[in-house]
Length: 416
Image (cartoon, rainbow, N blue to C red; front, top):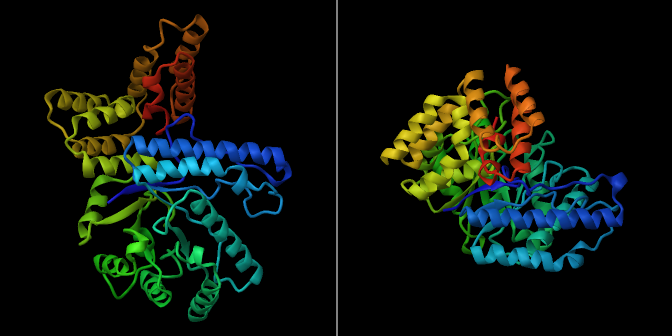
């Protein structure tokens, strides 16, 4: 089993994609942005390898305006070596990558123009995965599309349009149930008809449930759609945000609900893609509990990343974890449970000020009088989260200026 995340790697200074507007899409600008984005992907793969993350969804924005006529760059040829280099890392590390076209890639549309654009988009995604040298176990995930007042006709239209696709796309395509139109049962019937794998999404199922099967039964039935050439069965897992509309992903994956779901599965030999706002942080959390639960080295690494964030929310939680670590009386599961509870604590200016003092101590002796004055002013005016963001931004700039690498990897600066 591998645990993965989608598209964006947070908390790393040099991993950020760039986009480009049609109005600025000159040939040279395109070359520069594509080169930057491929370097970003390269760094993402390196990050995943360092952190033992074996499942990753590549952003569809890798090549900006890839199917737009304004993009005249023959990027497949120009950047062939870059793709090959990244692909070698993926292959050597046995990482499994995928892509997921967006909501406007609708293969069962009633509009021929929309269908043509969908084919072009699927072709683009196939090119990326092919240039990376990946085999057919590295998938392109797609939803069925719209219902258009007639689900049966819409499914038939999907099948007809699917059969016209190039074989290289067909061998990568997998279909996912969605939260509004097509249930897991609909997708299962479709995938059995055209003989391609089905991807189960748990949150979509909660919002748009199948009436015939329980979750564990659906997962097993979906498993039978995956053949050896397709690799391990793939599942999408997410949790509902407690503060946003239905279907919105949570900020983090909470440990206990995840393992309730995990324990439902009869077959544990699956790959699970986490769809969550804190991306790689949740992937690390779940992977660590699954595979490194009692590894003191991994626990120490995670504590270094979380410690000032925990301190800023509640000093007692900080002291509790520190004491348990000193006594050797804590594992990663319990550690994350304390951290999750800590993240839900109400804003406390006293705790925030205490953490800020500790962080400022790293460069206090190097700071000039102006920096000390700014710090004291920000601290005096710390009354809400908006002011806290200003304080954190200032401390982050100082961390970069004085090259305090320990702080630059702290989650204090990236989790609110």
